Length: 150
Image: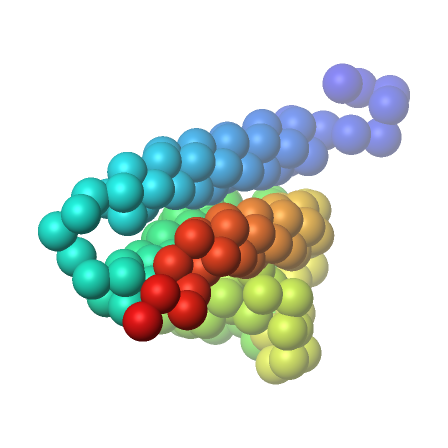
């Protein structure tokens, strides 16, 4: 990669980002598959199914956020990847918070990424937007099936 302006840090950052996105999408896909199957059972009342769906989707998003937080934590172990300011001793809860505000595209601005890790942040925001939209579409379809059955 010499002479192109990109180094090993950028290459590893792109590969790590790709792994995180693939992991989040596969997690989401498998979770929606399981949730969809469970909703088809006749054991639960349709109101309980909708509530279970909402809580299950929130849980899946929290797991997606945690996955990205682990990625930030791993990349932060090597200073060459950049940091998330205000830098200092960040624990997993800090990375999870930063991941949550990035995933949901809220971005309060109290934490600011620097260096190559910014790429992960930008892609996480895009992935979060897509996964949240996917969940909303899934919920809409399921609610159409059960809504107003009283």
